Length: 287
Image (cartoon, rainbow, N blue to C red):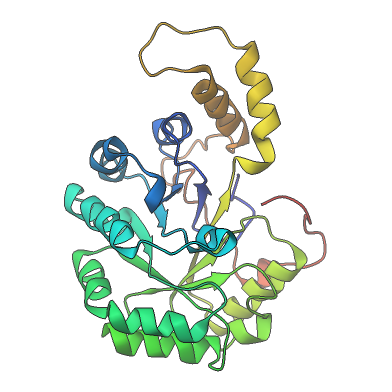
């Protein structure tokens, strides 16, 4: 998931909640994405705080899309306990991005959750975490909805969470947002429709920071399994073949190291600006 030709400051490799998968990404110090309700105690108290303290970037989703698909009820207390444990276990909260509570496709219900848990969200922001506010489509424009969130939480130090799907937010709606920090939810590859949305954001907010997340594993499942089968067994503890296979593929996807120590690290290449974005020769497949 190279981000050297995209507008992202960071692109999180999401779907890494299992131990073997997470180990591969954190060993390489890559921006990683997990789901709060799928994490083990060891990951919450040890693996992820260690990753954060070493300068690694972490995106933690609350998991509402999965609940929406399965028609299950969200256990918000469990999600919040995970967030707050991570905040308390790291000395570098600035590396942690967490998603505020929301209901997929329901702006009214999302606003109700923000009102109910406003003090909780305020405490995360005050601790230094980057709180992503998912902007659901509804009666209010995306820009007006963000302003409502800012009023409820009492701070502009939140990140505007923009759905990557065109049906969930149009480029015109995204253009109504005036802010300095954005996260694209669920896609890293610039499809034509996503490029139009990103361009609209950057025209309105030329100096904004943009990050994104996507499930890196989904499109590589068969390849990982095949590669893992061909790898020799290891006698080292916690060094399973799947983890080594994932690490090998992750390394293959990284851009070559630069020679100058004055450049940005690989996980944070220089983002593209509006005049550098084109919606013509863009890849149309992948996450």
